[in-house]
Image (cartoon, rainbow, N blue to C red):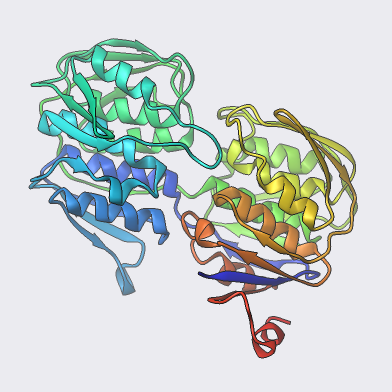
Length: 434
């Protein structure tokens, strides 16, 4: 099992490039199910969740080619034949986005059998909103032996009001609606850039969609979709993670291949904390922190609010900010598992329900810590970058689900970080990261 060894103390200086958003790529890969034609996706990140999605589509009979060499970050998918429209548990158990194939499978094949998602380290992500919407569109849904089975000769349009904002629910039902008979109106939709990215791809395939990126989306169903070449959005969470890395280390970091328009809440909070932010162009942001950082409060919200996927990283920053910060988590009920690991490194954090109180500025010291989920892993890397000594981060496979070669990217801008396959590192291996 791989580990990271990180020695703190270096400001990050230089340019770091953001990969494509895995949270855009996953629904876009699922959308390839909707057509018999080839679909080519560009700017696809090389992360573990993408490989899991490839295995899932291949198990259904699709041909999926992940680009390597000159075709790096390009994926070609052919769903001409879908011989087995089943999302098998042994494949999807490691990836929460598996429910995204439910809508496109029933729209294309008239049936879908998907392993039910269980709990998640950061809290439950119920699928009931997906199912209620599909039933309104005419699907018959049953549950047996841990699988959901949905059937419909052909879906029809409906008026669907989401009880709560759901990103995957919006995406899943949007994919179902594009091949349904008649018009479907969705209200209280997620407005995340990942939803808009999916809608852009579907429109390029011939779908008729209005209102993506707003609370109300209208879809006029069509009889078939054709192939498309689509470029995936930059990963706004990876960009935000790197911006925090530049600020927390007192560095001068240029974050390229990002979309500043998607980073409004993050950039605003960094400026409030005392970091200097310059938007250099439509895809480049510079962050500098040449003075003391100030405590600021955050409260996670659906887009365009402060993203829950940046809460852990911001908490690491708060440990190095002068004063008391309040961090309120409104999206997931169990997303403070990184707190105890930060405390092991010397952070002063108290949790009361959904609110964490962070007292900075505290000196962090290196420790052996455990990664519990994707974004918690990122927060521990950030803390280790400013800790005194060498930290060992265990279970970094969580990081590999959503960050592409993060240790190489950080090392390229001055971080002392190395991946190792064994926690009992030799003296020579540890010295190599100094």
